[in-house]
Length: 150
Image (tube, rainbow, N blue to C red; front, side):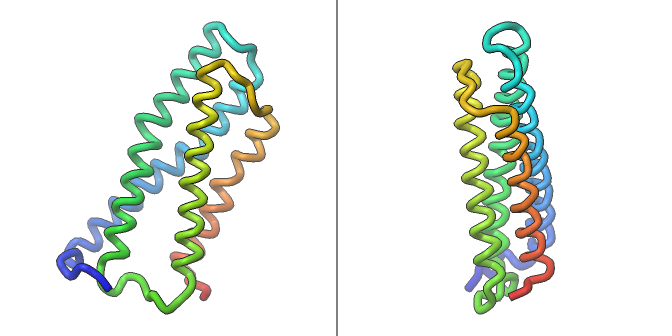
C-alpha cells in the first residue's frame, strides 16, 4: 500500500514531519506550564490578561499549525511505499499514542477557553501532573518508531 510518487521525497517529508513534531511538542510542554502559573493568580487584572495572550498565541500560532503539519506529513510518510510494515504491531501503538496526544492538545485548547473566560477549573497541581502527559506519550512514540519492539 502506498503512493510511489512520494518515494523520491521521503527524506524531505520525514524532515518536515520531524520539525513539525518538535514545534508541537515544545508547545505541549510549555502550555501546561503556563496553566500552572495562570491557575495561581487571581482572575482579572493585567497579569491574567498577559497569560491569556501568551496562551492564545502559543496555541493558535504555533501548536495548532504544528499539529496539523505533523498529521499531514505523518500521513504522507505512511503513504510512502515500504515505510510501514503493516504486519507488525508497533505502528498501531504509535498511532494510538499520536491520537492520545491530539486529544491532549484538544484538552489544552478547552482549558485555554476556560482561562479566557476567567474560569479556574483546575489547580496548579493538576497542571503540573498534566505537564508529564506529553513526555510519557513521546517516550512511547519514539520507542515505537525507533526500536519497533513488536
